[in-house]
Length: 366
Image (cartoon, rainbow, N blue to C red; front, top):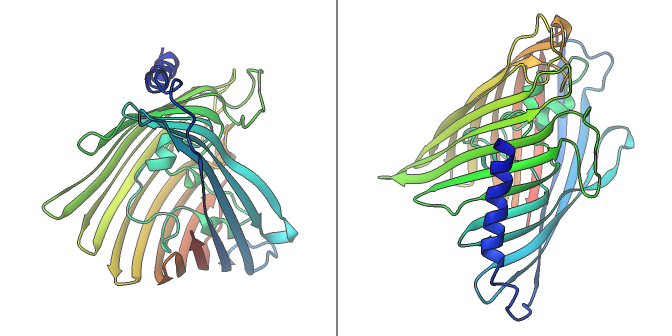
């Protein structure tokens, strides 16, 4: 019933918007190019380093190509491809496409169909500090942390699998008085592009997600908030996916404060598990802007499985407290540089692995 509702909403919206567009004359297409790049350097001091390097560099470049047009009836339509080139340790270079979808936008709202993340990953609120701001919880620092596993939810601060860029369909309503509703349906977790997975013994099937989002201001005080629910069927012998997330940010002048909470219970655990606590993560963050400088701090408390799926015993359990602070400086339009310090207090599978991590991050976006 839930799956049918999500598919039905998207199909009706798409038909309503496209029905009269086919009779219009051929539109002129515009090709929009955009993207971003970063270079990072990190120093790591952790309890159990197992002779890992203390210093390392990493980089990434993304190029977004968007052919788009507008019909005579006002319908906007097109497609988007995001190419990603990344490099890091051990000469590990790769290029892939992490977004590839078609879209239509109109008075009915918007529909996206293809390889794209879920609604809560796109617009779920986790507080004022987001990716690109030093001191944010959106996780680059953990690429430099090793040996002991972190709680899986640290990489999924919103609904548990919202970051899965599988082939899906997403529908969003128009914004009304600051409110917007979104829904997504994914037949098979982990599917992308032309890959069709017909077996039923993969990780999650028939995954749906719904989200309500709000953004507005009252007497100089800004409010951004969201609440989302994600669900899916798990293979035989595993617990089904059931995950909720809510978050909010309040802004006033140069100050911003907010946070979020996500609870996913025993989603993905093997049935009959013992000694593994529920998946959950909460965080609180604050931010202060002084001209081109952003000061930010975040505290994250996460616990649950230290594996994506299949947690069964205490060896598969982790608990982490992460304290982060940073400063970001806008050098010029589209160019920032920042410095971040993180203290990670983590216990996984009964083993402690505390760490101090200093991360330098320089970014360019266009």
